[in-house]
Amino acid sequence: MEKPIFEPITHDGRHDSLTNLLAPPLYYQEMARELARFQRSAIELCAIRLELPTTSTIDEIVAFADVLSNSARAEDLIARIGEFEFALLVRGDLKVVEKFIARIDFAIEISYACVAPKPGEVTLELLNRLDQIELTRATTTFA
Image 1 (spheres, rainbow, N blue to C red):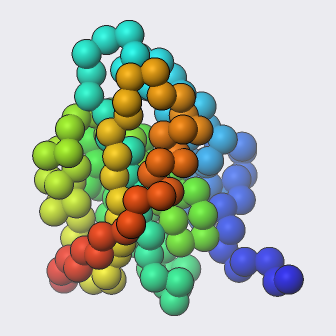
Image 2 (image 1 turned 180 degrees about the horizontal axis):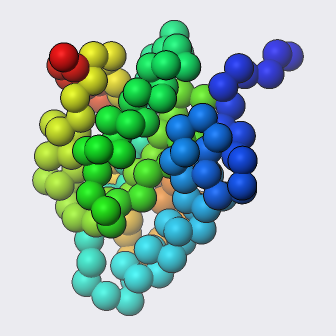
């Protein structure tokens, strides 16, 4: 079995070496912290999974990571969690997610899914539920 060319390898255990976004371990740790905050207070959260086509090049992956970073707010968590897969945790409801997706300005057709946590739900339960949601395709216009 061949090893993927651009798997999310971290240079410091905290960031993805290709995109400099959060690495999966740090993303999941921060997600658990935000979910605990969600359980204690009245904040709204949404987890988003974004996928690029498997034919994407390294340059397209890096460019998309840059677009995500520039489209997100300071309080949003962004990570590269797979070869062509990105994850975000945003404060806000599904309307905030729709506005975020609309702000993504990129030439490649992306697919995404999002889910809001339920009271008492832990990180793994939320991620499993997010993985089970069918991805929606979004085409944007990158000039």
